[in-house]
Amino acid sequence: MIVLKLGGSVITEKDREETVDEERLASLAETLAGHEDFVVVHGAGSFGHRYAAKHGVSRTEGTHDAAAVREIHASMERLNGHVLGALGAEDVPAVPVDPFSLAYRSRDGTLGLPLDGIETTLAEGFVPVTYGDVITQREKGATIISGDELVVALAEGLDADGVGLCSTVPGVLDDTGAVIPRIGSYDEVEAYLGGSESTDVTGGMAAKVRALLNLDVPASVFGPDALEAFLADGSAGTRID
Image 1 (spheres, rainbow, N blue to C red):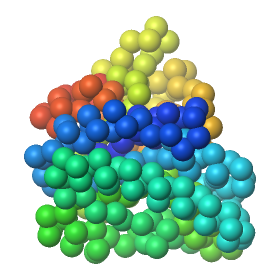
Image 2 (cartoon, rainbow, N blue to C red):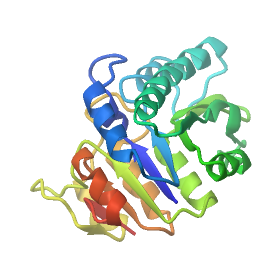
Image 3 (cartoon, one colour):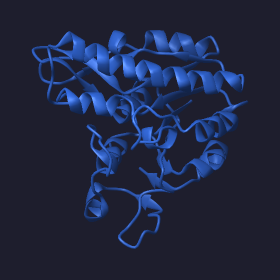
Image 4 (cartoon, rainbow, N blue to C red):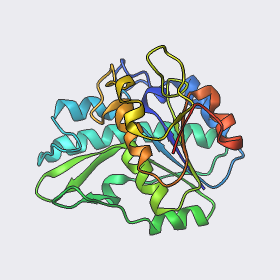
């Protein structure tokens, strides 16, 4: 079983508010057609990030403003609808998984993510499609759960065989712009990693690499053109393990 993250920058135009890159999303959906036993997690791109930043909500800063929670969540539901529509057009049996209704954090930030429903969804032949969202947190109201955090939790909880992060870049890049073939520790690449150029409340590439290094299964970061290669044998972009 594979956990696949479609980055927000891949499926949306991050500098144009709530704008889907429909051509790229359709191409990715076409590539996924015919494959089985995977979970899709998608990022926020030009949808949720802007609203989270507007309300000052992040993974560590929360809000008790219900209107703010609704605005962030509704934006992500709209994007999720686009992703489900593109996958459905290619006969991928995609169904939504709503993080706000499923996940939560304890007072110290520990993530609670019951997976029985997702396991049943997979067992019945569906493809669960979930996304970065707001979730409730004890004593903080609601905070952000990133797509990368969901990827880690799903990979660990579902005993995934591998993880793929489809990004706008062909892999993790060094200071010359070349793809780093393999990363075994964060210290190896710390000097090369910076924040996202667009509004992103979840930490950019540095956060992605840190999250993937926490896994006990191999992970890859790759560009959209390498999705087929990743699905075939996992050999795409930068391998992180």
